[in-house]
Length: 353
Image (tube, rainbow, N blue to C red; front, side, top):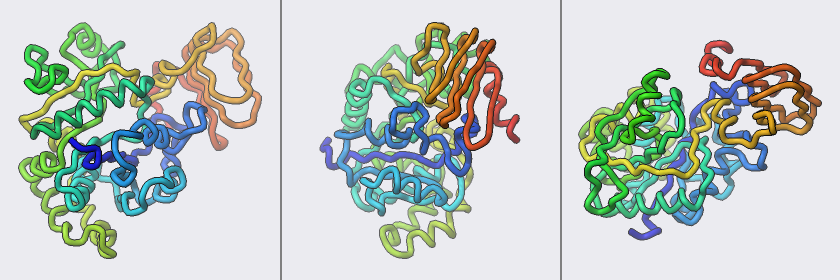
């Protein structure tokens, strides 16, 4: 494996509706400094992949409406490497498009695909795992995904069931996937975490470009044909117009359903580096520092009185005083205020609809 052949794809099209009111369709969570550290989630994703692949091999796939925000936040990324989707079609078409585009430029590319809105605490540990994975996929025709060792019965994540009885001959940290599991109810999640074979599905994938392109040809021929037929037009003036005209023809399907659950050579690398997909206010609470009473407060001037285990996010200049609440979300952004029980946060999407 050479570093020159390593490519990073950051998927940046989600709308983060469970993080309302801070995350909106106009400015989703990946473009926001959620942790109050001076870098947005997208910028933090870019930062942690530094030294893994050269800057010219970093790709962003996003919706057309977010092009300006991506360019403002990542001016280092080549404009030609920011691919614009005209409409939402989930992760499979997004990955197919960028895979064929990369294939045209680098037929030997080794690719890692990552969402833009995850958090990683142990950056060095993360980089070591990714480099290990890229070496594995450079030498095999395997599709590889990361499995996070669970530390709680999480109902917001999908799970991967691994066959830990036999590791790969090339790497004893990598195992074959038995099955993928949907987001479980609490009882099922509690059962999963007592079983060492189950891992959180991090939605981070590693593969060689010819491996993923061939997988699309076999398992998603309709999607494959659309992007393969456009090969002569990538990196030309006609590319965006042709993508605009043909993208809506793609099935709206995730990469998990389209490829991962169908392909045979699927492997998982179980890892532990302080990961969260930061999909909910509860995940923000679990990752952030707390005061003596379990409150996580992100904002300039917040005072908690007789309150416990709350997450408060108010980045404006208002003084905030909260008294007598336990296990609540309090979030304010752009004249919208959310006060919601933490245990009801999965309903936020339906509350705002």
